[in-house]
Each structure stands twice: as C-alpha cells, then as structure tokens.
Length: 228
Image (cartoon, rainbow, N blue to C red):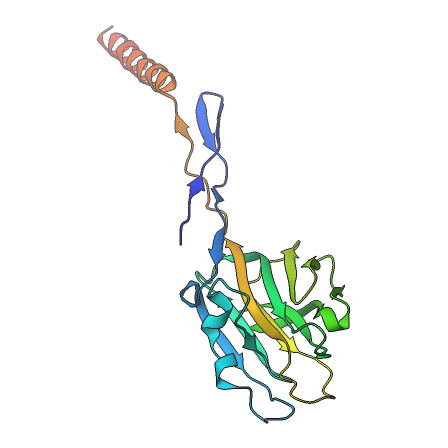
C-alpha cells in the first residue's frame, strides 16, 4: 500500500507555518489490505450450506465478476481496514445474479469501528429487486447505484464521521429454491490516514540573520556599557 503526505506551508511574519499533512487515499482491494475479515456464512435454502466454491474470500478480489462470495441467507461479512487508525472514505462492490433467475437478493450495509458499534447506512438491492439502493443515514454516508444488470454495481461515500470497519448483512427474501443470499463478485474500500500535526514553525534564513545580528549587537552594547 502506498501512502504519501504533503505539507502545505506559508510564510507569515518571517516564519514558515505548515498546515496539516494531506494523505493520499489507500485502496483496500485484497485480503492482505485488511487487518481482519470476519465471514459468517448463512444457509442455502435447498442445500443447507453455501457451496464451498462460493465461500472463498479471494473471489471478491480476483479482478473478475465471474466468481463470487455468497453471504448465504442471513449471513454476513465484516471488514476491518489496515492501518486501523485510518478512516473509510468510500467503497465499491458488485453483486452477481443470473438474469431471469428470480433470485431476489438484498444486503444491509453498516459502518462501525473495530468491528463493532455498527451504524446502519442502507440497503443494496440486486437486479431482481430493481437494481436500487435505500439510504437511512444520508448525513453520515450515502449509497448509490453505478451499474444495473447481472453484475450490479454499488458505491458508498462517507460524508461525516470516522470509521475503520464495514459490514454487509444478508436480508434477502427467504422464499424460493437454491437461494444463497447476496453474492459479492468484487469488493474494495478506500481509506485515508488521520491528519498529521504540522511541524514547529521554522524561521526563514533571513530571519535567522536578523536574530543573530540583533543578539550580537546587544552583546556589543553591553560590553561597551560595562567598560565605560
């Protein structure tokens, strides 16, 4: 992961004053970019257990929408970013459903800290439910639809607050055959580091010369006064 910090400075009264550092966003798009991923699979309405091939975390990060991680009916997954002191700024995910399958799939998204203290943000609905979103805390964060269709794309934008954890909970309708809940074909988060306090103001070279000259002048004046 790459992080860059830029200090913006200005000269005021002969001193260089630095503002808070602005950190470049970090992209979390692999298992290694998270401090923890807690996956609690739900059930398949026919088989009882979600198929093994759909319980692979790497399916969310393999750069293809042809594989998926299935939450299972009532299942959930929670992500804790690394570094944990960072704050989530946004997220992107694709839900995969075979067109015309009749599988109505829905997930509820929460934000929190240290995998707890969850705040509900809204719901993601697949194409069999109209390819849409609901927002219940729009002053904190908003969900939006980006791509309707078999692979339905959604985004999250955080507007207020600091969160290092995100959770998706399957709330799909449970009536029907071979249902295994919300299917995540791809997933990523962005985060940003907390602001870095500015360094202590440093006098400019010209200011140092004036200070040194002034001190030398005071010392010379004191010597003349003493000798007199």
